Length: 440
Image 1 (cartoon, rainbow, N blue to C red):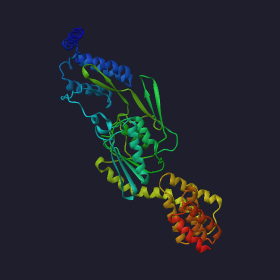
Image 2 (image 1 turned 120 degrees about the vertical axis):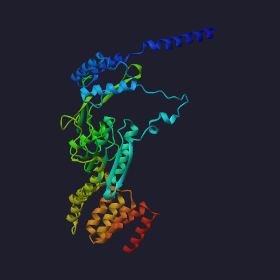
Image 3 (image 1 turned 120 degrees about the horizontal axis):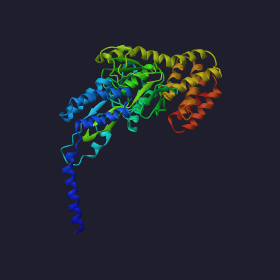
């Protein structure tokens, strides 16, 4: 009996809400007034907020918004606000349409990784070790940061990296800052974000990354008129620090971080509540866009950069390996000093840390010097390899061979025995035993 009474009571409440809800609907002008209050409280430039509100007051007085349907109302509000502010981030949103089906949605449709386009459209390696990365946007989750780590791991072999921002509409400033941090090894303040409503400044410093940083690799960024917001942030930050050459078209010109606010009847407004301040220029790209270093049609930018990047890749390779080659020349024909060895070891360490060289490639370099009868250079190279990869029997076997070529049988025997101990049943140990027999 009690349950029946409860159901009747609930039915009356539902009926009352449905019946009366139509009377509670806000008019378009009511919604404009809500937007005006939010603008004055939050928009980054108070004077522009007041000027915009005065413009909207004049339109309401004329009855401009009175009979507009939701989509036309949202479009008109966006256009009228932007007439005053010129701010492409400031926008008005119509109510979202409800799905017609009442069926239960698949779980995968609710998970970001399966919904919508991926952040990373793709990456590849062109000829001459020129890397190419196409980013659609800058997502704000740990999953998106992991994607950046993934692509930067794949770009470790690249001698030039091209970032395609021509179809990138922006995203999370912290993700932009994370990608930028891969190209700086110093703790630099890249940008500040000032919020008027909170009277607070957030500083975006170079951060630690999970991958290997590339502070010297040449970088090109492709832009178009569609490049916007966070994509402009990346382009502007890298350009202002001299870490990238921007090629393509002047970008969209939106530098203000934006926050969404709900309004009555399902409408919403996106209000730029803060502004980015670049540490180098003391300003940003709002309204002007990022000015390319090489301005040209966006469709032609990739081929142009690929042609430019060939010589840049050669220069980068020389930057990496020329100091090492000069060091090898300095020890040719003599026994290297401890200072010489330390200098060569440090060069190798840097290249190994950057995943440019590994144990096998260093070994190959050493054997190339044995083949041209420069065992004193090979010995230094192999010795460095044992320091970098001390648990490899192969590095000790190679070092022994260089000492044998130098006529130092005592050292050769010592290192062959070490290789046998480390790999008693393997091919390296077998080779070392054969060499020991020859020595004896």
